[in-house]
Every structure is written in C-alpha cells, then in structure tokens.
Length: 328
Image (tube, rainbow, N blue to C red):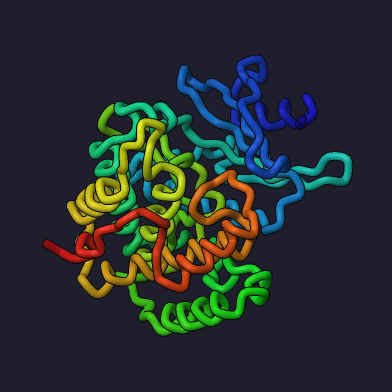
C-alpha cells in the first residue's frame, strides 16, 4: 500500500481532504493502486503507479487524450489537473518512483453475462457506439504542445516466441502478420486506440457505457481496437450458464452501434476478423486457452486449439456470421 505521506502529498497536489480518500483496488499488476476521493462534492479516482515502465510523459499523454475525448462529450474518465495545472506528476518514496494522476469517477455496473440486464443487445450497441465516437473524434486529435506521443503498438509484440513450438500455427501467424503489416495507416484508419477493450473495462449506466482503464492506449489500427474488443467479448461472454449463445448478437449490435456514429468501409470491416484471429493466436502463444478463459491448456485441448487455428475457426462450435462484417 502507498504510505500516508504520499497520499497526503497527493491530497495537497489535487486540493482534496485526505480524510475522504479510500483505497478501491489494485490493478492487474500490483504496482497500480486506485483510490477514491471527493472534491467539491464530486467523486474522483486517484491512480498511483509504482515503478512504472514508461516515462511520466507517457502518462501525461494518456491524460491529454482523455481530456480531449471528455471535452468532446465521450463518456470517458475526465482528468483532474493538479492545483499547479499538471495532468500527472511523479513522486519518489523510499527509492521508488510513483506516477500520480486523477480523474472523475465513472458510475455504472460491471457486466455479467448471466444477467440479461447487463449483457444484451442494447449493451453491445452502446458499447460499439462509444468506441465509434472515440475513433471518430481521435481522427482530429493532436497531442498538446510539448506532449510526448504515445507508443506505436506492434501486433508482433502480442505473440510469444512459444509459438515456435507449433510450426503450422507459427506459419499461419507469420502470414497473418505480414498481411496486417501491409495495411494502410492513414488518418481514417489508424490512430490512438484504447487497446484493451474487454468487457471488464466498461461500466453500464443505463443506456450509457463508460469506458475506463486507458493506461495501455497506443497507436494502431482502429479495426484492431474493434477486433480486440469483439474477440475478448466472445472469449469471455459468448454464452451464459443457461446455454444462450450471444456470438452474433455481440458482433451485429456492437458494429451497428459503432457504424451509427463512425462509418467504416467494407475494406476495413473485412479486416476485423483478421485482427480477431491475431488475438486468438496471441492468447494461444501465451499458453492461455484461447477459447475458454481459466481452463488448463491440456495436451488434448492444445491439439484442438491448433486445429481450430488451422481451420480459421475463432471458437470451436461457435458459428460467427462473417456477413456481419459488411455494410448493409
């Protein structure tokens, strides 16, 4: 946990009462800690990252983009500047570096594939719509003066060298990567993306979806952001305990929401499954069961996943309708 001294310093920096500050949770990596506090009767989140891998400039760049999106009316956490006008700052404690930032706390409920109110066509549509708005407005985003540029995302970096143990999958991956690397990078197709749009990174607030957890944002293709979101949504939530299959509802209504605010050509729509397969191969290369999260990747399961990749099947027994990746 962060010391009282560091929390007190953060309270001074952001101008809030230390007594209102409460621990919420750790990030996936224990070096990220989240707190909530109140300022002017409004709720905020304080994020502290210990021993970060990147520079403070990268955190400020994330906050600069979030501020831009929030000013455009997108439902993202709006950054709170320090009393000195900083988007984020760095502090030292016991020889460790900490990056500190703050933003408005978003309201809403976490998804639940077994609750029809929290996993349905409306949720998929509104999720796609907010992602579409992010991409639409980002086309015209320019980092502020003196601001670092966020990193470029390498699709190759997703795939572990463990893939070398599976020659046929490795060959498929290499061909897929070569095709991706030839794709154009222009204003309408390539820009700053969230990069981790799994269902755990949004909150459901009635008809609104609030996206959270932007600290992995990088530059890449917008179609990759969509493909990553859809693959992870299917990986985690394509069916519920009652056996209801959401596969094509997720794809159809996410894309309907997205296209309602940010039209996309058939060329780019047709590339989304390519990025979805890249996500599958990446999970497989990391030793994950790329179809059933949490499962042990036994030898038999491993062979089945290899066959599904060889046959260009996203999920065994799951019939995705590829005609959905076209404008109607």
